[in-house]
Image 1 (cartoon, one colour):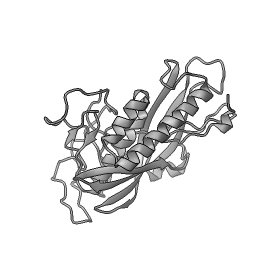
Image 2 (cartoon, rainbow, N blue to C red):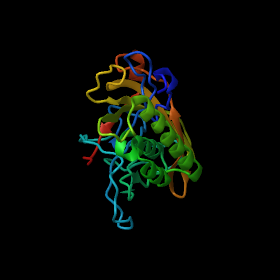
Image 3 (cartoon, rainbow, N blue to C red):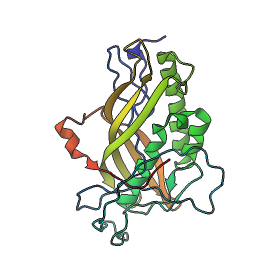
Image 4 (cartoon, rainbow, N blue to C red):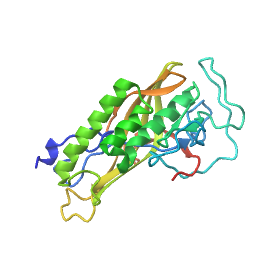
Length: 268
């Protein structure tokens, strides 16, 4: 079995394991999050929406979930790109429907819509059942460009195999393997009507439950994921995703630089 320092998988994709008792951070995955709190800028949001009548009836396990607290009032955003502003009282960036895999789609062509898309697409990686090879390919194919879909799916599958070997399990779907991620904030790196780059920040835990080996026991840590979406065929499509810095911890001053999400809607 390779040493822990030899098994390096993308944080977005899975695990960086170290020789010490602390495993360095894996990726940050965010669910249906919405509305940056206490902000006067046109910041992004995301919320689960009802399924479109045209979507297939057979729905695999949803890729994201959330519990929500909806604010009683929301400052109406404006746009700097000439796009329409959200109506007063509406949730900016709200998707219009959920696809057959439980992923919100159909975002407005605004900064809020772009960040909502990144948030929900990043959430695909946060549930262990989504990372089964056939499932992950289908999920990414439903929200990403064809090139990105294949590349990211291949990377996830390969890295999950390496992680399973390091942790001594047949696959990361083994019942004693734990994996869960939650996001707490975001930062917009750049935005235009056609492309947006967003950083998602949060916490993730992973490892073998009830392991006698401290190196294999569940660990937690903070890190960032990067996301790029482009406007294509009337929606924001995932064009690229990857690792950001494996920090900051929530106890660090730098953590204050990320905007908050406010949860909207109840997930499954």
